[in-house]
Image 1 (spheres, helix red, strand yellow):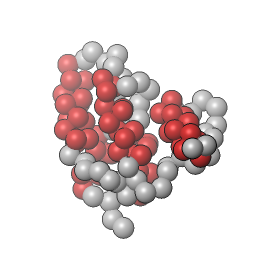
Image 2 (cartoon, rainbow, N blue to C red; image 1 turned 90 degrees about the vertical axis):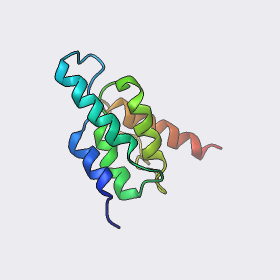
Image 3 (cartoon, rainbow, N blue to C red; image 1 turned 135 degrees about the horizontal axis):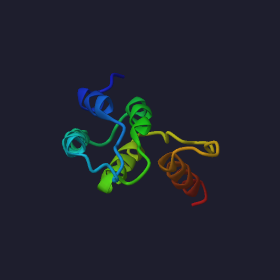
Image 4 (cartoon, helix red, strand yellow; image 1 turned 60 degrees about the vertical axis):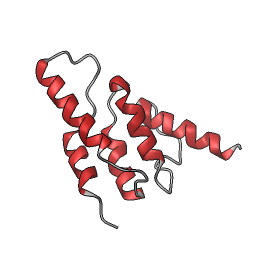
Length: 105
């Protein structure tokens, strides 16, 4: 399966910047990321989810990280199916916990 152009466009702009970035050019980058992220329609493919999971930053990025998380979780197969190594990105760890919770239901 091919990766949609909207996903490629977002990945090229990523990763998500920190909420602590107060630079004026940071505002422009944020706006571009926000538009590109919202252009991606759910569900994403497994291949797209693999690319998108690399775009998480270190914080919530004013809510965009949650939008990205929900996009990644819309894939048919979970991206994170084993416990990530210590020091992994917080969002990858969150995906792991959420996946693990589905196994106990």
